[in-house]
Image (cartoon, rainbow, N blue to C red; front, side, top):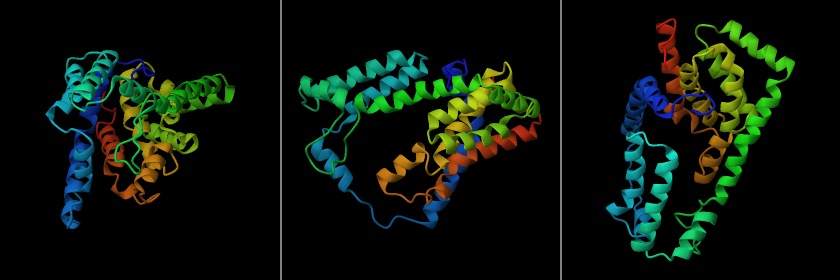
Length: 270
């Protein structure tokens, strides 16, 4: 997001929190109410039992996560925090999980695939990221091609002329359309950014916040979008039954949109 909108990552994070904290509180309140209406009568402990049986679980396992969090607070680039976190995890894999270095290197490339059927933890690795990584340049290429079409340029200009003061509503609508057609969150983000950029002019910070509160959240609300289809398929959830319970996904655009309407000219984010 920071790259395609030419904004600063940590400033985006600050703006995201400022624009979504109320929706987050409402989401927590909603889930609290649902938990009261539907209390758990039985807790399945088999997951933790099997996890402890296959792995060494202690506080040291939090070190890779702590490294990422601390370096993020210190505003260190992700290109530094992620490698350090991976290095820490590899060291723990040898010292605490008693894995061979060769096994760790193989896992880093092809992912973790235990011999046990229906294993609790599996997958990952660099190979699993090939498909997601190819989506981004393909999406950028499609956006670049469309950006040079006369009809596409006319559409951009039309959107810019109609939404000069409060473009968020149109951004949400375009996000739903691109999420439904592109079936991929990355395509939705890049296409919406390309279409709506003229409407925001030089206000890149505002564009970044509006995209974060629209394209990123609307994609999982489209059942056939990969952002929704893959998780529901993995956990065996209903194809559309999850939507009423995805409170955060539609409360953020709704609350943020109302905020924009109340302030009339919008809330400026730089």
